[in-house]
Length: 429
Image 1 (cartoon, one colour):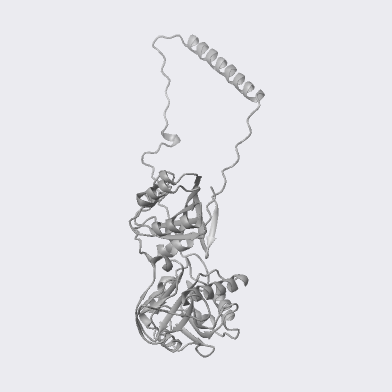
Image 2 (cartoon, rainbow, N blue to C red; image 1 turned 30 degrees about the vertical axis):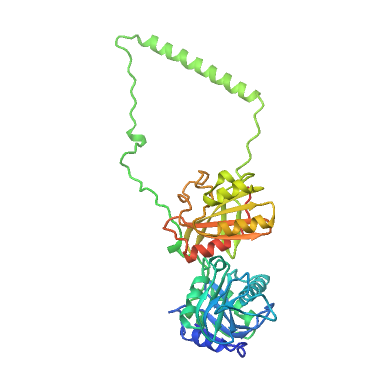
């Protein structure tokens, strides 16, 4: 990790943050990348303790000074935090520091996008200090690209590994341009960045490309022209001239019939050629490409759900259900994404469904692959999938993600990050 210091730390815990990151050491043996301390990127709502530029992602690091050391910090994104059971009261800024982290990450992402830089995902790490024995975040908040941790090397390093999951590493030249957004006088050379894990180019790594085995061609079992044998046998003592005459008559009759059929076919109006099949819709989120494989839109939700969610729909019908399945890759590993969008009569019903669907063991909405509407080569279903649930007014989105060629788990970091990105997909039935 290469260290660059631009200014003083905006918080007291910033000193601990710098010490924790400095312990990773130079080079790519631990994580690589460049850490810029004491900067304020364009559009950022506040000065940042650090911005960590990694080959597979960018992290904004915010320090939060607690009144005193804490044993337990509850850090949800939707409500105020509590420290050892007491609410963390704030007189200015967002409801809680986690939302400030998301705002800072979004501001930096917009700034990079407006400059046409490499579309690396920008996430946030909020470091609370001087000490926090246990930090608790709701599972749904983990999908939104923010981690709240204690100011120690292990916690910050683990958060960085979970959040920097871009599909391919950022090359040296785009990384230099990105760093100049943070520091106009950045003088890191290509050699410096290569030592920190940035590749020279964005060429595809053949080791991560999916391949298909093609059967080896062999001559065994094939029949070439030289091996074809034809024979014509005539009945014994059959006069040759009668045989030739019969064959000639049959050939002429066949020729006349073929000509008649062709003439009738040419005189009849031929139907218009069917339009070529429409290309599969492709969407990109944080630089990750999603190819839509199948999508449907229906009115009822009861017969397309199961468990407690199905019983909920029996009492509170939905207005519409839009479902889709997408194909994608994460660091060369093929994955599938199921998206379900439920339209409900009002915001209160949507809030109740979101809480139910986000609880373990309550059922959910059946994916299209399970109903037999998948595609050849797709996964067998979304068992053990990672899930993300989001409410927007009277609409609820449920996203599930699985690996296509390996075992999946609900707490898989890569799948959870992919599910968070899937919340921004728009199915096209």
